[in-house]
Structures are given as C-alpha cells and as structure tokens.
Length: 160
Image 1 (cartoon, rainbow, N blue to C red):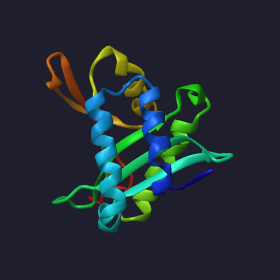
Image 2 (cartoon, one colour):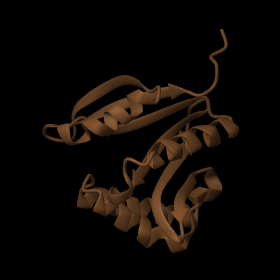
Image 3 (spheres, rainbow, N blue to C red):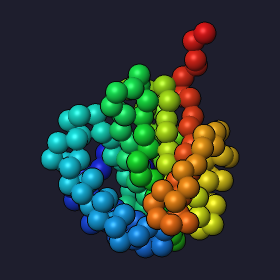
Image 4 (cartoon, rainbow, N blue to C red):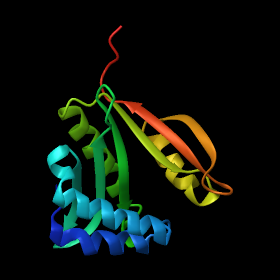
C-alpha cells in the first residue's frame, strides 16, 4: 500500500536506496539531507514523499516537488524499489501514483533527471515505456563520462 512517508521511514528509505547499487555515497548523503529537510520544512512548502509499505516493510518510495519559478512544473527527485522487489511493477505503480498526485496538485509537467551511463539504461527505458519523452542530455554533468539524461511528461492537456 502507498502511504505518506514518516520520519520513522528514513532509515529504511536510505537502506533500500543503498541496496539497489545504483547510487553513489554522495547521492546517499544528499538523500539523507533531502529527507531531513522534508520533515523539517520542505513538506510544508509542497514537497511530497510516499512509500510502498507491505507488512511494515518499505519496499519502495517516491519523492516529488514543485519546481520554483515555473508554471506548475514538478520534478521527480527520487524513486526506488528494493532490489529484491523489482520486476513486480511497484516502480510503475509508484510513478503512476506520483503522476496522479502531481496532477491533483495542479501540476502540468514532470521533469525527471537520471544518469546517461550504461548502468542506468534500464532506468531510462522505464521512463520511455511510461510515456516520458527524452528531452536532452548534459554530457559529463555528474562526473567525467557520467552525464545527465532528462525526461519530461505532460500530465495535463496543453491548451492551445
């Protein structure tokens, strides 16, 4: 079941994220900071965090937030599923939930950033299969030979 994240979920979210093997120590530190900020202040500024919980175990999570200085653009900051739970469709369900939540909060466009390295090819395919458009790349963004891939999806009709 998807439910709002609580402070009691922080350790499970961090452990789950680390166990996927996709995230660098610096990224895990950033996530710890994002979660601390979320419960201290950014939740009140519109940031949203949810977990997939089964029998008291966090199996996945999603974190998204409105982008400042835009007309209802939102960023999907984090989404992950425990490595032993991948392939069950939990990531797709979390993503669909986030899209619905963003739409319900007036969002019109979602922006996702991920790496362009071979390790992240399944991640990029995940977004493409769910209707996201590859909007561009920034070579060497995260580090040498580790660029950023940007995906977008409109979640409301564009008025013309």
